[in-house]
Structure formats: C-alpha cells, structure tokens
Length: 447
Image (tube, rainbow, N blue to C red):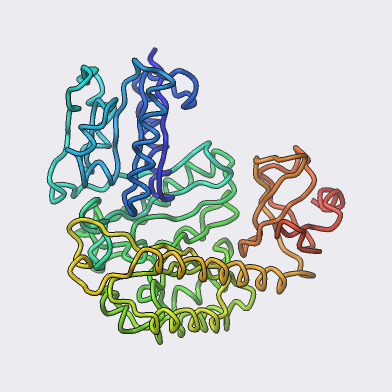
C-alpha cells in the first residue's frame, strides 16, 4: 500500500476538492498520511490568485523533496491549469494535471513514472474549454466544519482575475445532489457546513440537470432545501456577489432555522470608476443597499468584505474614497488583497499602474481599518447570549470556536465541548482580541 499526502494552497473550494481527491485515492488502496510522514506520493493542490501563491507552490515542492527525495510529486489546481509548462520545469515535479484532469488523478496515477533529474514533468492539461463537467466535492476530517462545494467556474470577466482561465465557465450541482451530500455529511456528526464555490450566487447556471427543469434552479432554491436537512445545526454562506445577493436570500437567512447571520460580500473597491475599470457588475450604491438590508433584518449579523488595493488606474483620491466608504459602512472585517499582475488579464492594459510601495501602504491602511472594524463589532457583542461551535484546536490549555455570527470565542479546554454547539454568554474581549465566555463549566451543565 503506497502512502499519499496532500497539501492545499488557497481557498475553501480547494480544501473541499483536496478532501474528495484524497477519498478517491483511498478507495484505490492508497493510504493517506500527513505531509511529513515519508509519503511515497505528494499531491499539491494549488492556487494562483497572486504571485505569492505561485511562490508558495515552489516552496512546498522543495519541502517535499527534503522529506522524501524519491517521492513522486504531482501538482493540480489553478496554477497547474494556467502555467503547466512552467510547473513541469520545477525540479522535483513529476506530473501536472489541469482542471479537466485533476479529478482523474486516481485513474491516471498508475500510469505515472518518476521523472529523471533534469527532465520536465509529465503534463496532463487540456484547454480550459474542455473543463465542462461538474465534480462534486466536500471536505471531511480536516476541520470541525465541512466545506461543501456547490458551484464551480465563473462567467464574470473581472479585469484582474484568472479564475475563468483556471476553472472554466460557471457550472453547478443540482439541489437534489447537494442535499444528498449534506445528509452524508450529517451522518459523520458534522455540525456546520460552509457552502463554497467560485461564484455560488450563480448556482443553477450550468446545472447538470438544468434541462430537466422548466425553470433553472437558483441559489435561493438551494438554501431553502438545505434548511430542511436534519442533523446539520448550521449552514454558512462562504461568499456571494452583491449583485446576486437578493432581498429574498437575505430575508430567508434572517428567518432561517439553520443558516447563520454571516455574509461575506466582495466589494473590491469603493470607487465607482475603479469598479468600472475592474469590470465589476455593480456600483457602490448597490453594495450599500445590501449591507443596510442585512443590518435591518439582522442587526447583529456579521458582514465580511473583500477589497483590492492598487488596481491599475486607482488614484490616491479613489483609494481614499474606498477607505472612507468602508469606514462608514457597518461591516465587521475586511479581507485585503494587494493587486498583483496576472498574465492574460485585461487589467494589464490599464494605465497607469500603481507602484508597489504605494500598494503596500494602502494595504497596511486597510488592514488597520479591518482590525478596528473587527474590534468594534466584537465590542457590540459583549453582554449578548450566543451559541458557539467549539473546535479541536487547543493551545496552552484553551480551545476556540465561533458564534453563529462569526465571533471567535476562547474558553478553557474541556474535551466534552469539542464539536458541540453550546449556549454561552459573551463576557469580555481579552488581550488577544478574542471573546471570552463567562463560566463555561456552567454552560456545559446547562447543555
């Protein structure tokens, strides 16, 4: 029995796919082990959103060679689709599998051969236009919560983004299939599912059974069906575009039995001119309306924001416009991305470019703003009662978990609390910026 190890770079979607690839390999007789346990085969699932992700891939290959110089190294994922030749020439890489091939990894593995030093890796990489099939995926045993893939690919032509080139056109599963997967996950005693994809609000586009339906299935149809799945205590929506986050979806989550009041809504810029340069499908006014609607129906709801700094054409005035816009919005935290040039994207044609040191300064400003936003949101939660799903990560005798509205809680370690959703009272924010709960032992007694 050969041992195989996986390493995942990038997003929640990649984690769900890595877990599924691992299960497929185990079904073929391979033993999954940790990366440092002398595996015979290393599988690296890559991201290519930024240049930094590319560098990380190269570093992981070097680490694999140190662990087992004779080990077989295969690269899959977005980077593998975008730059197969470049990856094939990285010393130590033996195989590269593109978007249409990665879910055939378990089938192709018996044909792989160790590449002699100095020789390029085998490449299995079809044009992205051939990546038309939908492959279901979900993570298991990696974390307390499970990432459930419901959609893949994207039809949006955002100027800075390579995802359509790396994953192909938008396509999704059917409601029935996703519900079936949710029941399978519930049988594993998982308490929380995070719905993930490239553009999950586009659910129903390219659905495998779409021709069987007079009306295409929608994301609202999906969450309404999942809300009836017993055994799962929480569903969380990972990220949804503001133009696809409808009033109906917000209203449904507000009264849902299982969907939590937590939204992650990409903004990218608070300047309408820059949004136009980015080829986004909304203006800041729509974004404001979405945030206000969430807060109207869910005053304690958590709202996360993606924002890009230093996009070509972004002036100092427009960055300050974004900064002020975010300052005034009642959002809870920011995910800040520094723009990086990606081949074959239309942003490369936009002038002027923003110098690197200015991009770094703008990023630092927004990271500080994010810390302030998160602190203010946590302070607004002190004194409230909530429920927390405690996780397995234990550090220095303390364990952590998240409330339904994504406040990170810390409590004294108790093995009986792990993977339990319990009522707590949010008492104080500690010096690490985490929320402490009062008398967690009493909480257990109540449960």
